[in-house]
Each structure stands twice: as structure tokens, then as C-alpha cells.
Image (cartoon, rainbow over the protein chains, first blue to last red):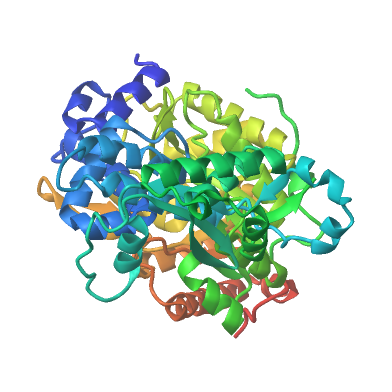
Length: 268
Length: 308
């Protein structure tokens, strides 16, 4: 007699790969063949997976159309089956999958748009946090500032791309027909996605992006400023802008901006 | 047989779920529920939908929980799998139980995964001694982990295994006896399985120990034609059909007053539609239980006006 383990292995293969492969399963069949009965489960498994992916990636779906998205979801599920009883995390590898699939093609930006959508979703599902307590900071002696480790909002995500993903996302989450967007309009996009009561997007300079990335690694304030200054200089050089003003990173201004934006919410 | 640890006492709080009619809570209705304060005795939410660390859904459920009794109904533990139970998933369920303090906690008599791959569907089990042991051990493990009793729900099925050695209701009863869990009877699922496999749903109800039944589900289904015959498909996406309402009357006659849920998972309609279905369930319960002589149980619960 087939063990439960063997039965489940064969059943799952039939459901996720090919219902016809379940011919050897001990399934009763009458005028409805076993493969047709297994097909009902296969359809459910595909439908549930596809719906979960759809709710994580509505903009990608709108960009490529429902039929292509459905096919893409099916192929993606075959390569990256769900590994959890909760379907939400199943979409995590989708941006990398799309990126590899469309490398250099018409949809070369799709992987980045998907990554943007995923980060938006992560921000929306992250823990809520109280705003920064300025009184607490006022109690810190100025001499200790360099050693402070600032904490980012758990609902903050940093994003970088060579495509204008924020504009694409905004245009495709609006009800109206999206306008044509020039893919070269944002040669290096850096965004802080923050959910704090509402979803907000902050366009960042190279220095600001490096500063927040350093804080995310819990680097002390002085080290984060150093990393930000270096990134600002590199970006200015790459852009051919050798003006000293462009290279400077204003740490005080960045700190004020990010506390006000609830990007930074605590410190120790 | 798993080690018998009784979670009955831990599962039954001093203020249990009222034996009245609730509805399945879906995110589309959060705002309507919070703004409209509908007259409904309780809500049931899908546990996995509230696994997030924070965000709007978690906040909404916390606010709704302040106003209504809650049940948490899981779909992802894959209790019938021969894989070890997923500890990370168990921990997320336990966090949800601590966070939302539900009066009832339930899962399914099914499996969903093997060798780490998940179908994320409620797959059928063969009704064998080996499967009874597998499910019972996992149910007992989950109950130990949560420190409380859980309810196990029967699922719809579209096939039967020739290696089964007992009927579905005997299988469910054996799991409940071995693990000490309670039973959530989905009457639509019983009806779907009865039509698909040709048994009398009343035999199913009569085969269940009334003391184990802690909750009833009511839902809708659809019909497809395959190979020249009809197969019922559980969609939980349509009104409750007349035959399932009849089964509800029969269940109330056998089990007495019981928390009853109107469940709608696909093509989700306006909240008003669910409330109308709940009204119908209330009217049937009032009628059936009065006839059974259970009027006293009807009016002792808190929450909605069941006798309306």
C-alpha cells in the first residue's frame, strides 16, 4: 500500500506540475477521470498563487496585461513554488525573476518596477513606530553626537534604479490611462519609501541615500556622514560636476529632513 | 496516538464565543464595519491575513476586536502533511493569538505541502489510520504550542482515495478523539462532498459527537460539468443554497445552539449581503432551536439580537 508520504509526493507533483502525472495515485474514478479531479486542485493552486501575486504586483499586471501576467505567474510558480502556508512571501523572488526574464528587452525596467512594488508592500505591512522624540535628543551632550546610532522607521525602504519607477508606479496606480513615460527620464533614481500613517515617497540625493543606507546598518552618526559625503562626491564626479557645493553633504539638513519625514524615529 | 493533553479548559474562556451568528471578516469590509458598527454577534478572520508586523489591516482588526468577539481561522498550517509542522508558521499564529485574543481558533482537516513545497490549497487526505496519526500528532503539537484547544474543520473534496479505510466523518471523529481538538463543521463542505461522493450528509452529522462541535460554517458553492456528470466546487463565493439551509436546521436539531458563521471568500459582495445572510441564519436558528426547546440558550449570549 502507498504510504501517506508517497501519496502526498505524487499528489503534489500532479497539482503543481502535471495532473496527468497522478495516474498512479489511488484515486477512485467514475465518469470523471482521476486526472480531471486532480485538475480541480491544480486550478485552485494556480488561482490562489496567481491571486496572491496579483495583489502584490498590481502595477506590473497593469503594465503587461492580465493574460501575460497570468502566464508569467504560472511559469514563476513552477520555478519558485510557495515555501510557506502563507502565500504573501511567495512573491518575494518575482522582481529578480522578471529582471532575468526581460534583461535587455522591451520590458527591461519591469524587474525594477516589481522591486519597487514589493518594497511599497513591505513598507505597508511593517510595524508602526512612534515619531522621533526631540526632547530625548536635546538631553544628549553635543560631544556625544558622533557616536549616536539613529534608528530608521521599520516602515522605511530604500530604492535605487536606473529607471523612473516612481513615476511609472504613480501613473499606473491612478485611475486614468497612464501617460507615456520616458525610460531615460531618471537615469539614477533614489527613493525613500515611508509608510507613516500614509505612504510617502522622498526623492534622495546620492549623499542622502548613502546616509540612510548607513543608518540602516546601524553605523554611528559620524560614520554615516562620512559615507554620505563620499557618495555625494562620487556622484558629483560621475556627473562631471566638480563644484565644491555639489560635493558637500549637509548632515544637519539631512537629519532635520529625515526626522520631519519620520524616516528616523529613534536613537541610542 | 499523540500524548493526550487536555486543552479543553484552556480553550474555553470564562466568556466563550456566543452561540450566535457571525460573519467572515474580509479586508474589503474593514471600513464599513468600523464606521457602520453592524449588528452582528462576532467576526471570524483568516489568521494568515494578519501575520504582518503592522499596517492598516492589523490596525483595523485590533479596532474591530475591541468591539466584537473574534475567531481566528487558519488555512496554512498543513496539519495533514507528512512534513514536520512549520515552526515559523506556528509562531506567527501564536503571535496573532496573543495580539487579537480570539475566542475560537481553527484550522483544516487537510494538507497543503510536502518536501517544503506548498500548494496553498486544502488538499484531501486518505482516510487511513496512518493519516489519523499524522493529523492528530500535528493538531496536538499545535495545541501544546498555543496552550489551548483548536477546532478542526472538514473541507470540500473532489476525489476519494481507494486506499481509504473509513468514512470522512469517522476520520474526523478519530482525529478529534486522538488529539482532543474541537470540531468546526462546515455544512457547505459536507454538502459538496456528499454530492460529489454520493453519501447522505445526515449520516455525516449523526456520526459526529455533539459535544465536540464548537462552531458551524455556512457558505455557497458552484457547479461544473465534467465527464457528463456534475461536480460541486466549493467557492465560498455564493449565497447559501436551500439544501445547506436544511442541513443547518438538522445540525441545530442535533447539536443545539452553536456559533455559526456566514463565510464568503471569493467574489466578495457588499457587507449588506453578508448581513442579510446572517439575518436568515438567525431566523432559522431561532425557529429550529425553539422547536428543539433550546430557547434558553438562544437568549443567554451577548451581542446581536438572535431572536429578531
